[in-house]
Image (cartoon, rainbow, N blue to C red):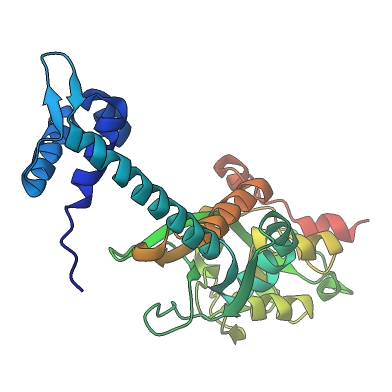
Length: 318
């Protein structure tokens, strides 16, 4: 059945003006101009075919029809608000499908999920991993955590995590071998490469090394595999600092040199604009941004450019 209803902006404008008995206060509440309120109320009066207000020089008053209409309308709006709250409450709980890159999920997200569950016990996270951007139209994905910060008109993209990048290796890789004293000594070691985001050449240039062919060495689909190979003493990898905090603390990996590439954004949280402000998604995004601010202390540019102290050399002498 088709309902012959007035436009909702006119309803909101009338209800606010009637409650305040003031077009100005209604305009302040709805964040519009006073003339916009007056126009919407006039449109509603034309739709109904009755006058709702008696307009004086400095004040307005409800007509009998306006008083009766407000009484009935207030109950309807209260029911609408209650129904809206119930729907919002349901959308603030239950499953939330999150896709991430394998390295981010394993090395950053999962170790911190206890804090998320404590803050949002009614949201049930479903975590999957992929190197490909989520197809929100076809995949069962609400939120995608992507490498980089590529923009799109249809997507809300919030960059949230930055990191420096520096060489790491297993301490056992250097057993029985001369300590590294300068980046140039890397020529005698195997370099491990990521298929995506391989920046050995840029790091060597940043370290002041020229004439070094960094291309030889094993290649891995993503950085999580590269770091696993480094932990097994198969060579030296370039690591994002925020992804190896636990390995460095546990001694599974050590920094080979202090020199780092300058901080850069490496991850963004992405969702379609059409649903990016749903309560569950907003809660997860807010927690993610807060956790990144709490846990990340990027190396400053000046620190990343200072010489290149050979960390392994220092360790080998102790």
